Image (tube, rainbow, N blue to C red; front, side, top):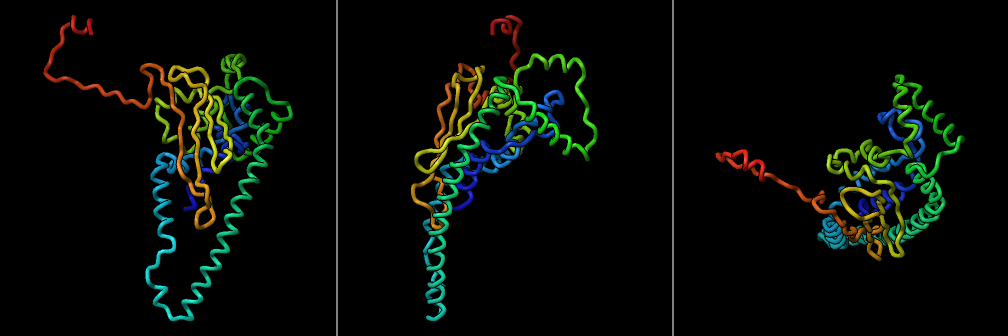
Length: 290
């Protein structure tokens, strides 16, 4: 089954790789910095990938089921006249050779991604430092970003500029606050982010990816000190099967997430429901003691 491994693998690679800009709907005071780096377009891909990632066991089951159907005969080919049946069998032989090449292609694409991933890594590190206030972009980088923004604004209405108070307040701000939350909210992931999610995603400081020694990859989410959990990083690892699928592509196997050490009373996965009691009056003392 081609979609899931391809989407997941390219999601991880391109989420870390892409260098672009955030939409202009963000705070005008942050505009010149936000245009430096972003992963908005890749987060759109993340929305598609999440359909598979949210239920990896189901995806694996579907893939195994479909793989089990490969090669099963409906009886139609056997009913064909011998000359035609032989040609159909010949096409299967051609397809087999195609699958071998496809498997080789996927392996070489993966190696190419790893090669360029190493070249992109310094850009990811610079992006992280700028976002988290550990470094400032160079004048050349700023001019390049400003030129790109001006080109994109040519056909748009004039944007409001920050007032003097905003400029003064921003002078003491380090980095780009809530960068990753802003990127997610300006992508297709916005529909999946709840108000409770926003509170913790405000402290998301970096998203990284690394390849495994076996087929697969790991996504790493780094957080600042926050009120919800003690983990400094959270990761989720995606594994592929050791053997390629019938069509030569990687086959998604399963995913493993890191345990979240929630602080007391801050577990966002727990839904607290309050039940209203009917026909029961409460005294002032009751209200003061409960």
